[in-house]
Length: 423
Image (cartoon, rainbow, N blue to C red; front, side):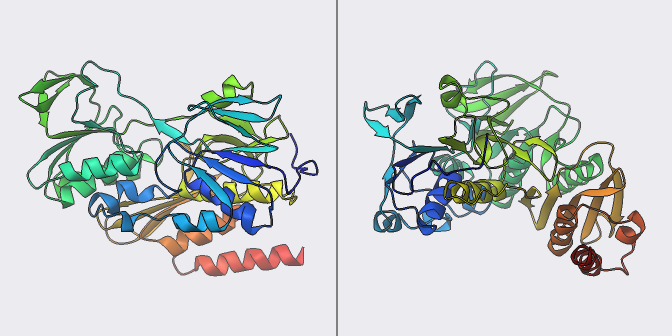
């Protein structure tokens, strides 16, 4: 794979499969960057590209479409000469002839193809998982449907205590619902934060009134006079006016796999976003990309990656030949707390803490082999931002400096920058 796009004509037809945030940002960056050829964006949703974070946050409280962050207004695409094919599903990629075959039988020719097919919710596979009150959260319509069910006094059961599940729980509770969260693991958000923070958020939700049940599995779901009845492994049954499933996602890589592209927890691409086929790129949640900063392959499900990797891929198609190398960044809003994560924390990291957990803003620094590899902050956005910069510069900072509140992270970051410039 290579970032050399010398074979990509700036006037040749370019197609993008996937009309989410990554697809929209790629199209935007291509046109603004001078790509003069036809650009076609193929998507199975009836909307222009939009950002998804609000669907589990503010949009659940105020489901007006004005709350949606559109990549660009609909009229912009026509003005920019970008064709949006709404409600169309790509069925096959013919790599030999450079054609995408759609579900309506039409064929879209391409010289360059970008795959931004994203992910889909992992389905619940128990008896009764087809109950009409079950909801997943991926699209505007999913969020609107759920929002209509979040009525004062309604009983909401959330299956899965990941970031999405906990955000939905917080939003539902703020709307006056009775909320139960069921989680198979011992703590919420166990794959994303250290156990200390998982325990803190578990206590927070319980104090707010959420019935959080960890180490609990769902056996089946039945109907009880039009309501859902969620049966647990201990024999209990929880009635629900809505059941929200948040047990992870699956990358939509089947189309690429059928086309013969390499798949490894997503579509395998190099640091330039290119697959082994020099005419096909991938970006966003579906891409398993090599990150030079981390020194390994990673697949990210985040707003930052969906936007910035798509822009980087577009620029590489235009000839930049620049690796996409960013420190991963993610955030979650629950109640009045803003959680931000920079880097990739892992079990076994040395933890250094600034602030007192539960008594105001706090930030945890993850050190590995003496280097800063992650920063996790609660209402400490500035510290996480500086931590992100330090990680990008190699992470060489002492635990003593990180732990000392008298030493500002801005000064640590500035000193590292000056040292790098002098080297």
